[in-house]
Length: 378
Image 1 (cartoon, rainbow, N blue to C red):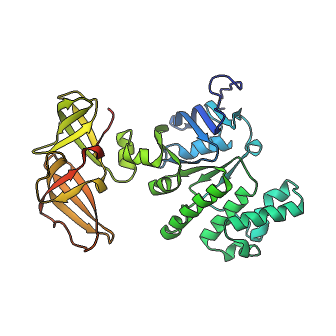
Image 2: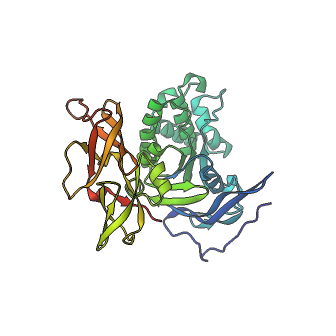
Image 3: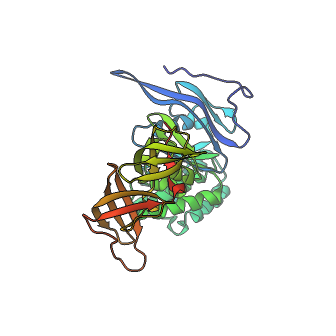
């Protein structure tokens, strides 16, 4: 049986006044035929009231286990879970003021949309007049008031997901936990629902905790993102912080597309360093790495420019040969094999005329502003 660590309110680990959810040193270990498997390893998180918070990471990173511990469906092996400052470690799910929405909508097929949304309120013996008012408001929120008398089978996948959301928000929980709720939808509908979810969250003001492996979803909707890998939080920050300034090599590679380059610090100038990267390659970056040491760098593909003329000395630059050209309508993607041994991806917007800047086999220069280079720790 899992052991839990309890703490008294006001002791170390108490959540701040603004935190809707707080995890302090939370770990979860499962027993298997091979022994024990650590799914979550000492996570510390504080999610503020009214925040749209995303738990992002690949399959098996511990994000769903973390959410299930917040909901009470799993108990931590160690650590404390707090809701609105109260220690709820060991408290059953039905006594926690949170609601969970799954990828499977779990609607009752024999009930109308109205009755599906009203189900929880009626179980709690809410007066009929209040049920009608709150269900009507919830269906207005998800723009399905005209479908109140329909059965779920008559609705599209996106509409069914909206009914599931209405059923969740009608209970007015302190936090709504969403476990990859858009995974069953096609791409176009999923993108539309991302905007709808953000609108709904903004209008109701409920704390949303959103589990996803889709970087685009997290970047589109979240106020802050926790990137998980192998049971630990690799980085916590706003979408811009996580995308523009990745804290680890994993985050740089997992969030969007990132070019990873390794070089040697040739000289230092205050907080900045000039890094030699292959024959003729030069990158300037802010880093504490000492002269003569190797450093890992990252730059995003949309920051890089491709041309045939040698860039000016104020720019970071690499020499290479175009290996692949992919036309994608709004942009063209180039893959360039550099003399540093790294394959660099360039995203070039197709402004005005759709004309390739280079063909496969062309020798080119790559350049970008030094401020767009980021040195990875370690």
